[in-house]
Length: 198
Image 1 (tube, rainbow, N blue to C red):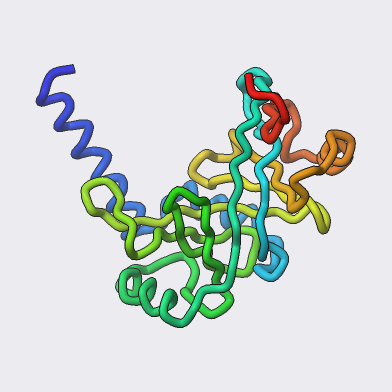
Image 2 (spheres, one colour):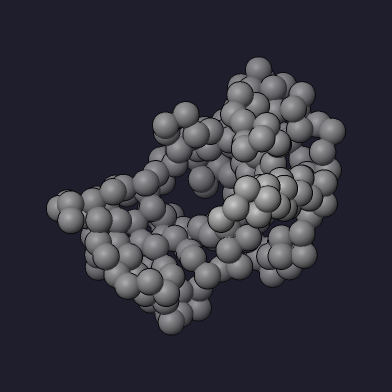
């Protein structure tokens, strides 16, 4: 790849990122319209483990156990987010009902909105490529008290996750949770949080 082509790719990527902040994409608008059920932020509080990934790639189990911990933000944290994102027209407002999403490794952000679709914004101390600010629209669909689905609207539902609050949930429990669910129809399962590393 020559330098001029690389510069064009970087420029297009930057423009796409800026556009995602300035205006809600058609993909995100459609995702929000189709996924308008309710998932309370109170329900999400705590640590969730991503145990199944559903997509069209073959099932390769792994002991990697990605997780996210949701907590309520402090007033200081909310002020920081409002100072950074207050000028943007976000799909959801920054309120006291928002949740801090901590993925570890200094990856934090704020989750906005009280429906299934929620807006994720980066922590004010984080920086995207080129110093640009951005957000992402995601879906969190409650299955039951222990399990929920998660996916990014930008991925158009092609890759979805099964999350659980129970790190030791059995395969039987997980299979029962996804049984007859249209969200994962015709997708391969990649298992995470296995005991043995491959």
